[in-house]
Image (cartoon, rainbow, N blue to C red; front, side, top):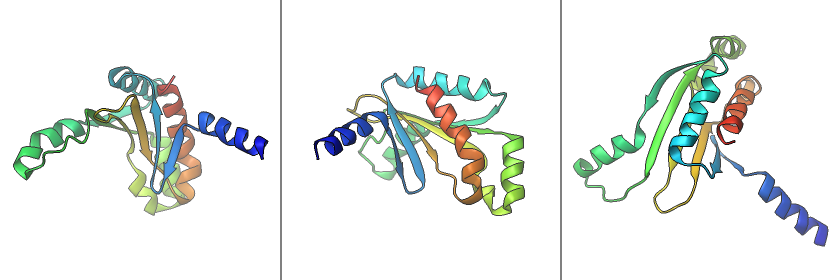
Length: 145
């Protein structure tokens, strides 16, 4: 019993990444800017091109008043979209319905009143999982160093 409890605490410390249906997320200690820049470098260091950066926190802040919203959802939040022609082709040749996982996207965000920065991505399913998830995991790992 004592070993099981000790193992549980060790696993909680080691497995900082959390998987929920449809997404994987990890909280890191770095600032938003440091973490975002590290993720961008991790993507570009692999020879991949960033297609678009969606400024989610800015959009919510800008449109919130028009919707009557009072709650601040994020302090800062961006979604970085990128592509790998090789992995995308492989994934879609395997199953054309894997198109829904393209482009790849990693979210970087902070929550009001909470420490740390979150990294998250859509969890690929089926045949896309084995093809794309190792890349996403590696980028998250490098971006959280």
